[in-house]
Length: 420
Image (cartoon, rainbow, N blue to C red):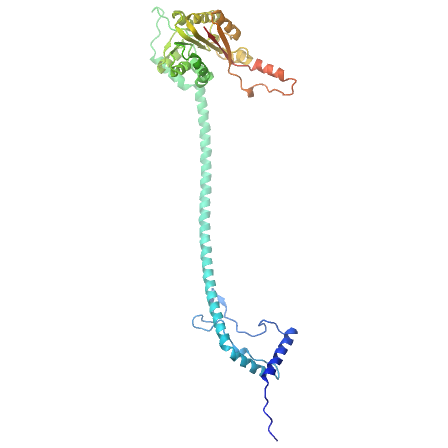
């Protein structure tokens, strides 16, 4: 029996058939393009950034080329396929093994970078936590400081309120002026007796008029009001301020170089002026004017004086002022305005030493009768608008309300300015 011929394998035809079969299997969905279903050796698991099961330094690689997987278990043609795969895999072994080695190196570096990043992230999270704790502590400290400051502000406010109350009480009590008055009284010489031949300056009412003035006619408001007279009296020669009180006008005139002095009968005011170094004559106004030489003064001022005088003394004062003023001299008399019912009927009677209000027409007439050729009436101290009656604005009662305002809340004071 003749020996059978050796089977000759047509590799090219076999490869063509395998490609066609693979194309048919892939078209039929027999397998996909990935390696699913192929038993690959999985890399060892990672724990804490370290591969367990492989020694990354001297152990096996994470990625390697495995030609032994190129086999086929197909019946009949399986060995042929395995032979062909092995042939081709051996042809590309060096290329694929180099790629596997490069991939393994890249994966190793990536794992190292990821481990370093995880460590850095953990350190950053720790630092953020520390900073957060520090910020929380600072915030708590700041909140505590703010609360403490608010408490201090509250305490300061309470202390300020109490100080304001005490200051108001002290102002009402006028302790400073009263103590000064007592001290001046202690230093003053004893009053001359009735047999000594010299009588003390008369006082209308024996009460603390200095404190009374300080409360109802504060010094600053008097200075502000009398500032208008300074320009009138500049260059007028010697000026007598009758009933000068605390001497506000004298000080204003002295500051402008005007030769001015005061005439006063209240012992407290006299002592106060002497302490200030202000020239003052302790006599009543009419007596002092009567003793002066004719035309020896350039100005005569009486601020809130004439309402304290009886009619005979008032007429004598105006007449004597006309005699003692030089030609061009000025007489200024300021007094409450009875044209305002609030000023003339309410505020006027606050002062016990007031005798009667004097109408501006009457005082102007007295000045004209005493020989003053130019007499001007200046109405002063208007009542603030917010204290007056509101005008309706409908046109019907506006004029009535305005008239009523003028009657009730007219100018509180007036002054006559008479020139010789």
